[in-house]
Picture 1 (cartoon, rainbow, N blue to C red):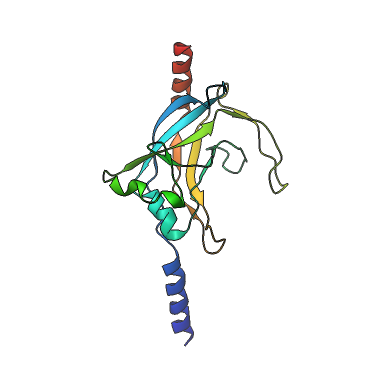
Picture 2: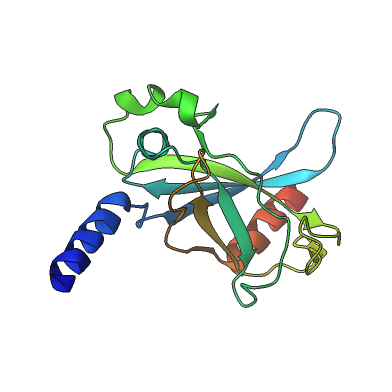
Length: 181
């Protein structure tokens, strides 16, 4: 009886866990401006996945998000990643499920934005503060993962595999900016 109950419970839990993006791969990096009036630079990070992220979010009622951190200090809090994921300039989310239906080429290329610098500030939960960083003057390997939770607040969240933006790639992008200036 207890074995049957355990198997039934495993079936229920296993059925609730969706396949998550597990093939996220860094492709390229480009420096871009935040806006015409703003002289702050952003890193536009292109990555690929064979998963249709808009459909993944819709079918599982997930919020699409990205988390970025320094690879050698994964537990250190930094506010580096902008919260949205884009495909061909369109912000993905629950309302954008039809956009990717025409994307037959796999893997699909997406992009996110990261700040080049950030200041220290209190965290939302008043725990450890977010640390200041300056990639323009102190380039470092940056790791990122797609991550999010359920829109309903129930169920499981998700976290993709880790992708790495090498320090040398950030340095090269900064050199290219200096040459153009």
